[in-house]
Figure 1 (cartoon, rainbow, N blue to C red):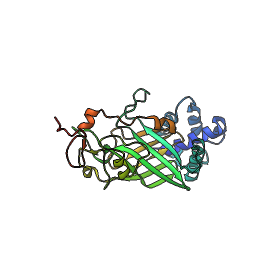
Figure 2: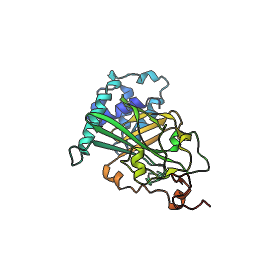
Figure 3: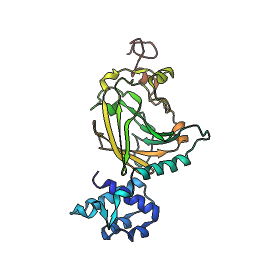
Figure 4: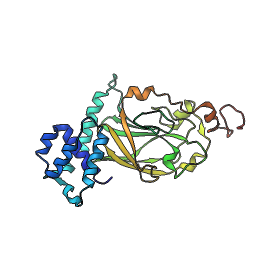
Length: 283
């Protein structure tokens, strides 16, 4: 989104030092954005307001690189993001010191009018810090790996991201589903390897997994509270989706059995090639 990185930088500066302090740094154009900040709004809502203001200028150069002599590119780089991650990890640190620190971000597919409802098409991003390295795990559906789905239920996957990068308020990673299984139910958070997922009792998706074997690129932007993701390979219907940070306790409390037994009966295949976990032919 045009000017989004600049808006994120300004938001984080305002939250760090306050509106008045930032107005002393930014020029008149920046003052307009500072005045638009509303602490009662979410980060994403403030960012959208800032972007709207920036996009209203006929000459976009007033917001290019420096705003009132202040370099926005230096306000939220990779180092700052890792510092924020470290602070967030400290706040969410498990009791066992040997357990890797983990952050959870949740996309609600059925979030309407501000009401968040658990849905089988939800997606979850898990970022894990272990021995000063960061890993990213993605829990999603076959919709992330194909252009369109018509007439059948999605398959579900748990996959580790590759090529994970953070820079200037932006995040990117790849999801390569090749040689991975898709399953008939959303996968429990914490299960990654296919052998562990199968051992936990999950059934293979009725549709051939290889139909959705591909490498997709996801890019987006981040704040302390959310990650906005764009699928560059198979764009989302609304262009982007927003993942909101949630505490570990809430994520762990979700019941991932989100498909009814009747629907799952239509959506899985036994390992011997026959349909249905119940062993009966499909109606």
